Image (cartoon, rainbow, N blue to C red; front, top):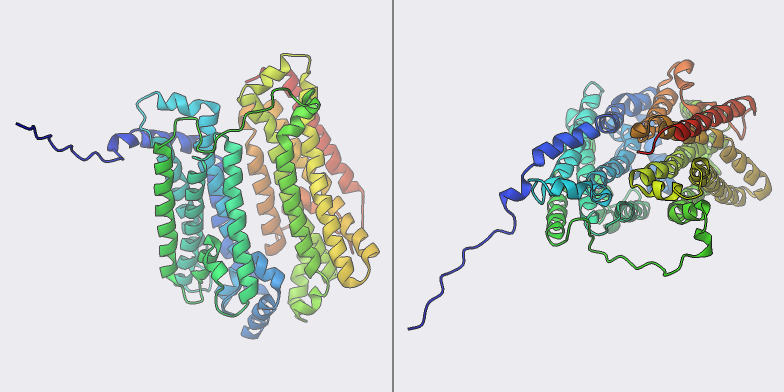
Length: 548
């Protein structure tokens, strides 16, 4: 008699036990991010109403002024590429036009947050220690995503509240807040997927940022092509384009947010599926074996630092160079493009510090580039902290390499790297500007000067990072908070007309307003002395403290 096999019960690929400990890990992540997370949530959420809507309301006082302003935006391919289109001439739509850049910034913040609490934990070995306890397989990724999603919703809520008392419809404010939260959630999910692909947190971040760059480019090219016409198919392919297509104060298309929700659900499902099918600490991208014998360039600490830093240096230099090309191609004739409104000219002059609109735009643009260069400088200096935390610094320092020499090997890139990137952007911008104006020699010199005078302020942030590394190594990432605070002071001070003592807190405020303004070497010398003092203090502190 043939035996009949009993039917096997269906076993779900995901069990409740896989999420055990999610709450405990979420509380741990909140504690670890108790400084950085609230900082970027507040800086992204609160300034929207007072800075953007308030400033537009002060400058463009009549419907005709607003209509002229929006027309100048739609006529400028560069502004369409950078910020996207403005969909009508209402105060709300015009006011949050530049705040649309926050869709990109919140994406960067959530990518860094998710990678920090997932792949970076596995790379350092802490993830394996946690997995050896009663924590579920999916607990770490779930907690990281809940943290990023919650922070994105908090940013959206703060943005809505900051707009609540402004003279704009509340429905449009809600649409903007949800679109902002949606952008953060989508790219948190993108980071969750890329965290499964490589065993390196640096490569996982690089892939996520590459995806972000592609989506931003698709949106920019699509908006330039469409102008004031129908939405381009390229923009529809980009999460950045989805957020803009919510159209706050210009129709409030809440239905577009369903695309954000669908993308989050699909990407999250993919991330958990990939996580279930890989080992802890491993990635789905196979690692290439290294060479059997080290190249001569790796014989010393500077060669090793170059090997570790070169990819980042090339990527940041290329990014700043592209921005320089964009600025150089639009600066000539900007006064005619903006129109004859004296209020517009007064605002740009106040932000740039020069009577000439073209010179003011160059000054303002290279201040923004200097902020980006400062971010690169902090990133390069933080390599010291990551090497120490991963115990690789101890291996190097057990030989004949001194502590100062080891720090100097990375400090060279933190100082000269942003200088090379910023000056490269200056060369490209100056050539494009000079070609359009018919004076390459003169304009190139002006733009290069605008780039060079920003470097002492950039190096102040290098000094802050090195000082934290030497004196308070656990608090080294606070350097990002210092840069964020400087950005907030710059934005609030230049747009809202804050008192000078408040604006003087920002190192970038002290750079001479060249071209066009009076040049003084005194503030540059003071900034250089401050940077040198901070670096010296950090080196002395590192020599005297124990390795972590």
